[in-house]
Amino acid sequence: MSAPTLKAPRGTYDVLGEQAEARATLEARAKSLLAGAGYERIETPAFEPTELFARGVGESTDIVRKEMFTFDDGGGRSLTLRPEGTAPVCRAYVEHGMHKRRQPVKLWYLSSFFRHERAQAGRYRQFWQVGAEALGSDDPAVDAESIALLAALLSQMGVREVRLRLSSLGSADSRAEYRERLQDYLRAHEQSLSEDVRSRIEQNPLRAFDADHAATRRVMHDAPRLLDHLSDDDTAHFAQVRELLDEACVRYEIDSTLVRGLDYYTRTVFEFTSDALGAQSGVGGGGRYDGLVQLLGGHPTPGMGWAAGVERMMLAGDGIAAGASPVDVFVALRSDGARRAAFGLLEAARSAGLHAQMELAGRSLKGQLGHADALGARYVAIVEDGATVLKDMQDGGQERIATDTVVHAVLRGLRAL
Ligand code: AMP
Image (cartoon, rainbow, N blue to C red; front, top):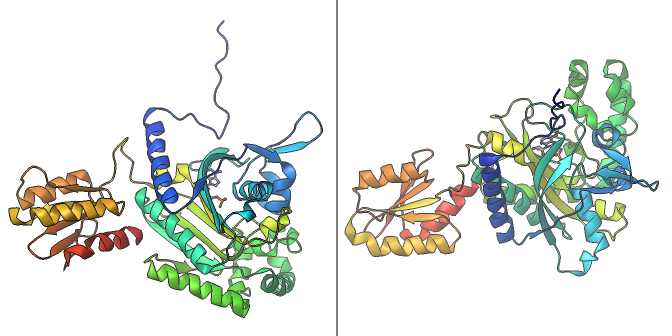
């Protein structure tokens, strides 16, 4: 009799062949984007003291209550396979005295995480996240830059039908006041709430906004909203974040019911979803966590960051051809006389970090557009005498602009969702 075969545990999977290539491409793109924005790579251990997550993520969260793989190290210490990356990064920031460096300290990671969840499409027990954290500044520009970077990553990964929901949870003070108001409201409607929500009125009332239970949802429809009870400082901070996102052409919807499943968030919170995904539509999210470093024993230090799921980016992405690099802009020539200007534009685009290609085989204009399409170019810049027609290959729109403004226009266009 042959030995019984063994399978990878439920909720885990092997990465083979093309998948491995696609992941390597994702990693290279994340690295180029984040390193280019001044983020340094960090690797933390796969397991940490359980207390890090109990304290950092919060005792009343789903993650800590029921999703952690926790074990004894053999010497009576409780360890946990990391379920998320922010608390470990903050632990490392404190442990290595990073407050002495120039602030904000910007760190990024691509690592595997572990949660004991019911496995289904897009939800695994070992999964990978790309994450970015900026510690040491509460400037709203940090929030906007961080969100814009994730928008850019999703766009570069070809993630389809993306939506960004944005809100503010205020700082600890405005939240404490609001919490009591919400608790009063929940107690007044206790008989309609689900068992789970009722049991968390004291510890974590905000999670009631996340409930699936129909009667609870009806109650929450009229519940007081934190966004309407922010302090003046928090309101001003949120307004500036929104202004900067508008400036960067990042589109968002304000969603005052957005609560993230982790306790550490303050002020800005956001979540990107993709309608191309099924029930598990979250592709990435994050926010500001101004109290977390202090909670972990460090000096008071503001922080802001996000994590995006690798599997979900691949599922909702338009398929990353192994090794193929996206063409941001294809430089086409209306006539031979435009060759010098076209070559100058090609070089300028590359200096700005764009993936640019130029017509090199003397095709007709129609042939050049067909070639650009086959390469999957996002923009085609048709250089003419004195100006350039910039064509957006995604929506077919085009405009005639000065050749020296083309690079800027492409950069702006790539950033917009
Ligand atoms: P969270 O820390 O829960 O906000 O998760 C951030 C992102 O990680 C989510 O938007 C998902 O893309 C991804 N993610 C979280 N949990 C899982 C899981 N169990 N399996 C796959 N991806 C996940």
